[in-house]
Amino acid sequence: MSGSNVPPPVADAATVGSVSFGSRRVLRPAAKVLPEHARAHNRSLVLQTLFHQGAMSRADLARETGLTRVTISDLVGELIEDGYVAERGMREVTGPGKPAILVDLDRSGHRIVGLDLSRSDRFLGAVLTLDGEIVARHDIPVPDDPAGILDAVVGLSRTLVADAHAPVLGVGVGTPGIVDDSGTVLAAPNFGWSSVDLRGILRDAVSLPVLVANDANAAVLAEYTFGGAGDDVMLVRVGRGVGSGLLTGGQPMRGSRFAAGEIGHVTVGTDGGPVCVCGKVGCLEAWLSAPSLERALAAPGADHDSVLRDAGERLGIALAPIVGALDLSEIVLSGPHRLLDGPLATATVETLHARTLAEFHDGVQVRMTTQGEDIVLRGAAVMVLSGQLGVS
Image (cartoon, rainbow, N blue to C red; front, top):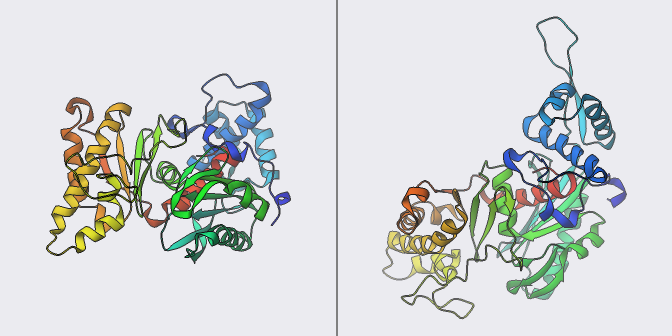
């Protein structure tokens, strides 16, 4: 499928970080909208409202968005023509008067392709609706030779696009490593990647808009849009390594070097501890990564609860200064449920409360994600929705 099948995007797909994830998930400008940007902003506002509130009349849309009925009528007509909005029939009424025609986001009219490159054994891919519903899946083994990884990712992307059976809005990718705003993977040691223009490579391969982000940064977007997380949330993703994604005030936090949330190699063992793959002693990842936990649990004489509680305490040590500095309201854990939920999560909460100001931070919630193993795939879909339609 070529890029000619995709209507012009609302926002540049390379600048997903600039798309607002505002209060109550309604895209309202933080500053005055310039005339040349007003139409794109208003389109996004209409799509955002329909995305979260469902079918409504044009008059309802005008009230919800604060736009005039003439503007709404014009925008809805344009969005229907572009294939993003559809009329859904008449509203049922019991009183006098002509029933209103309802309009809604055409949730199945386009597809999104999502890729999750975070697993150590397989690369996952999915075709999703605009609602984040997965309608097709494909996966491939991670190549043993790092030199074959890029070709494998390109091949998986092409397979997914071919299986979309509808116009594809774009491709979202969650990958390990440090990723800049242009979609270049600055460093992904497990892949042997350094300054790999993954966005450009995939865009050329499939002729579609492409967005690329660190897998934890993608995951926190899924938790925000589909999982009901608040505006100040940190998602800790535990797998082959340990990373996190952050939202503050509903906005993604990337950092000056695109490395915000890289907590895996923060030292949490002043009493020594295991040697990390990075060569340091006492990194959080050396206690908390899934392989590290599995090895500790399999050691002769290991006490299951003690191993998990120790890892949870180390996580609480790492999180306490972050919660204190950013005043977060919620910590979400994503990873193997059997490892994270239970003694590990309990110890995390206890340590976090012991190391922060009780008056303000005792209410910080620590919970497992509700998105399961699809969280990165669904986060990749949010990236595309945000970059292409201004919806989050």
